[in-house]
Image 1 (cartoon, rainbow, N blue to C red):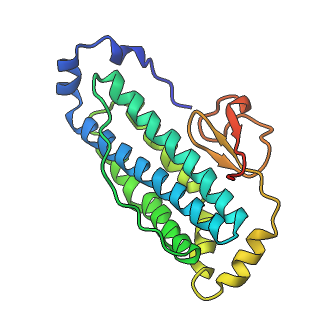
Image 2 (image 1 turned 60 degrees about the vertical axis):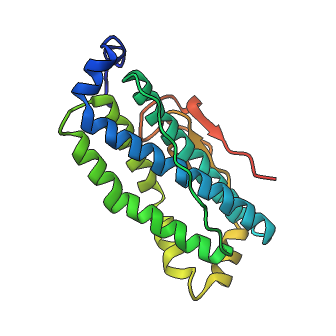
Length: 210
C-alpha cells in the first residue's frame, strides 16, 4: 500500500498549499463532482429498479452508490487538508427504465476505468501530492473490480435484458464495501482489502435497500 504522512499537508499554510498544488486542487474538485454525481445517479437508479421489481439489480446499484460516496468523501478530506472545501454541483439525474439505466451505468464505469481516472492520475503526478494520488488510485482500482460485471451488462442488457435480469435476480448477492477505499466485493471478506491492504474489519456489509 501507499504510505504518506498526511499530517504534513495540514501543517502548511492555506496559501502555500494552494500555490503548491493548483493543478491537484482542480483534479480533486473534478473527481469529487464526478463521484458525487455517480452516487446520486446510483441512488436514483436504485429507486427505479425497486419500483420495477428488480431487487437484486437495485441492491447492485445501491452497493455501488455506497462505494462512490466513499470516493467522494476521500477527495473532500484531501481538499480539507489543503485548506479548501469540496464544491458540489447542481445536477439533473436522468432516470430511464432499468434496462437503459444498466446501459448508462456500464458505459459510465467503463469511461472511468479507461479514460477518466488515467487522466486524473497522470495530471496529479505532475505535482506529486501523494495523498491525492493514493485516493485516485483507490477509486480507479475500485472501478476496475467491477469491469467484468460491467462488460457483461453492457454486452447483454440491450437485446437480452430479460434473460440477464432473470439471472441476476436468481443470485444470492451479498455485497461488502471497504470504508477506506470503496473496494466492493460480493462475499464476506477473509483477507485484508485487496486495494488498500487495510484490515478486513473495514468492510461494511451493505444492507438491501427497502
